[in-house]
Length: 245
Image (cartoon, rainbow, N blue to C red; front, side, top):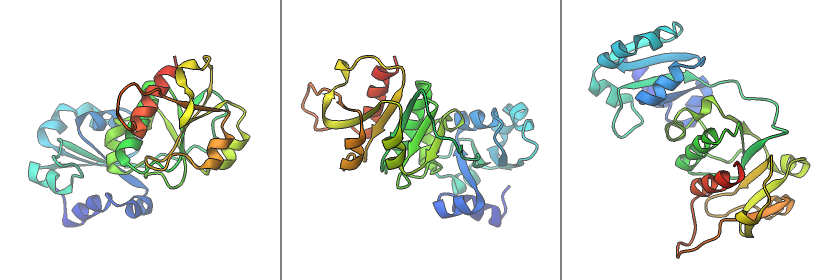
């Protein structure tokens, strides 16, 4: 059971200002909760249905630092950020941000990605392809927005996300910088590369001219049909599949 204060506290975490103030975020649902509980992340609260808690007692016992709250379905619905609550909700402490920016291997740089679903999906894509670093401009969607955490499906645990101004990083990078643009060369004509920075722009505005000009390559996905465009996450997935091969 949750007290009124605990209920209010959890619901406040749907807002970025409270996530920053308390340095915590929400992770919801069976699979995501099992991923986070199976990690070394610090968990503050576990809010779960009785059946789920009994079934996953060994995972819960790995986190003696967390308070366990057994709730009824309607209580979980009351604090859930999902349209339909899914058995369990965690309040987890934000990991310490990595200080060193990547200097080798593949990484993804995101400029002004606003949609939380896109952001979370791109984290999941990076996780799928073994890309360990994502760099985000400060105006990107908050990486601990509940929708981002949901879409990333545990990707935060394996992908380091850096919040930084991209101008300096891109202009001083010693790796190839590949900017996704509508007027670039076909991705399929590029020679295979061992490392690089894939630069993805805002969903509607694309990349600023300054960033695009700093890239060593401008690339695009050839269109065969009549669709006007692809969204940022789909484009990132297609580009990663070809680049990281």
